[in-house]
Length: 381
Image 1 (cartoon, one colour):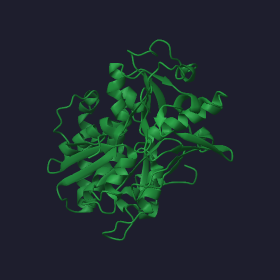
Image 2 (spheres, helix red, strand yellow):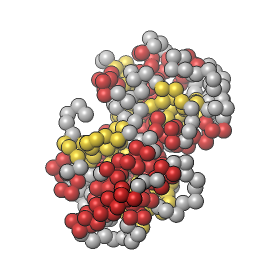
Image 3 (tube, rainbow, N blue to C red):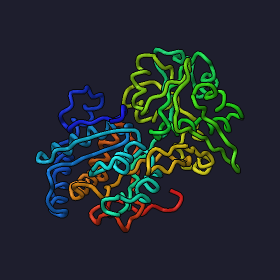
């Protein structure tokens, strides 16, 4: 099991939760709506195995804890288990390790096409997915430690200058495993253009990684190359972890001064942060074309399913039911809840921006019960 993984049965965790109160205060009428909707879905989809297996990106831990718990309370005969990883590792659990889950969520929708739709399950000869639904979004921010060197100093105007200070310790998720990691590098490249600092990426990465992260100018854009074996150098001021969620304790303790994180995550954990300009935060559709000029390429060949090229774009979360899901019917019922008003309310309470309506790639392959909750994904979205 990779160090960034996390597993637990829903409703059985003893871990303290910061956002549980918002969930507990859901009105009775809303809870009744959930129960009635799920009951109707049960009738439409058929029987259940009594288990629901969820795997999702680490940045969704807080809202999916709450979603899983509420679903389990509304369906006491269903045992809900959850597991989280960096987004790339989420998909590899299915495609490379051949584990079975009913619902899969990634923080980058572009991973599903090349890693699941274009990859066949050797046991069935079918692709691991034939559709996905974009249901949430986010943006990147620079979180900083209230105990660190940037506290009281960093602003939206000077953040990129302060990162160049050799005494500042910066946290980053491993870009080979977590979408937040390669998005952090995209943010730095976009900042290089915005602030007219042609060596900014080099200043912040040179000598910090072994082997080195390099950049290559191609056309009107930049390609960032990540070596297959990546580690920080001795004495590096960059702290790398397998998943962005693992950087939060280091921010809280002051062991790192700052880290690139999703806005929803730092809000959930009450950490201070600096909002980045929309030209670099990967959160504004108006700058989609600008974001797309940055590409991250992983020189990675250890896992069969990886198509290691990721283009910059608006942060978009996607959910699918793998074709080898043990209980597709139960998965459909959960997605009816997730994509409906009650599920959206839980996400919003946990500061997770949602897409309304949700947008489906492969709409014609989508289960009929879910089509009324989505619209077809249009080109360029």
